[in-house]
Amino acid sequence: MKVLVTGGAGYIGSHTSLCLLEAGHEVVVIDNLSNSQVKSLERVQQLAGSNIAFRKVDLLDERAVETVIGQSGGDAVIHFAGLKAVGESVEKPLKYYQNNVVGTLNLLHAMDRAGIRTLVFSSSATVYGASEEVPLTEKAPMDATNPYGRTKEQIEDILCDLSSADRRWSIALLRYFNPVGAHESGLIGEDPSGVPNNLLPFVAQVAVGRHERVLVYGNDYPTPDGTGVRDYIHVMDLAAGHLAALDFLKSKVGTFRWNLGTGRGSSVLEVIRAFADAAGRQIPYEFAPRRPGDAAVSYADPSSALADLGWSARRNLAQMCEDQWRWQRDNPLGYGESN
Image (cartoon, rainbow, N blue to C red; front, side, top):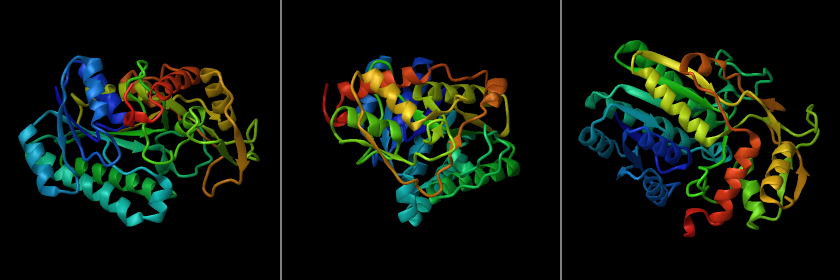
């Protein structure tokens, strides 16, 4: 199968591209490199022993998108490309709606014209908002609390409307919880631009001395240790979920949605301790006030993905931290520094 991967040079996109190559698929990556580096794809090719076709294209460039999709052809698209920083989305909502929603519309028009109507979409558990209902099932109402989450919510609505109007479309909506970890080789991993927005990459950067300490937002939640609890999923398990969804769509039409998580929650302090164990060093931290809108506890009910796709997360928190540490230790400045 020939699979076009938007945002394929990014964190989840690069790991999924590797899994696609290892499964024998042909991969074309479409990425504007705004928050990624082509070096990730060079390392993916090194690991897989096969080549990726790379096209530097911004999804906001409608004509370029139509040209590259039309020329590349293909059987399916996995759509990762998009801005993803919650805080920035609050400060610059128009930027997020323009990039994420309009970029997706341009992609869908180009796919339709090229006759490619199989799509796996990178959605997010942020569509559930600050729901206190746990575990979260796919039937929980969408109630995103920030512009980033609302772009995912709106794109999901667009895709549902599209498949209802045109029964030739086969679409999977994958709602990720908290992707962490790296490929076990340590060659590819998460390389956030600027200060990381998420917990584990920040902890990893503290471990290599790029930051002094971790700020823990809130220690008075109704949880065992007072810190927030989240569902962390290894990026390689997440990548496997995309291949399972792609395989499912071969014989289905319509729109389908699945949570991709472990179904287990870990607190901030548990994550810090697990990473300290993996790295063999202390991780300094200090408490800070809660952030508005943060739920005390959030974790997935991934049973639908198991029933429909035969998929479940296999790696535990210790493995996530071990792989994240190997990547960060060997690449202290990410892709900006050669091994």
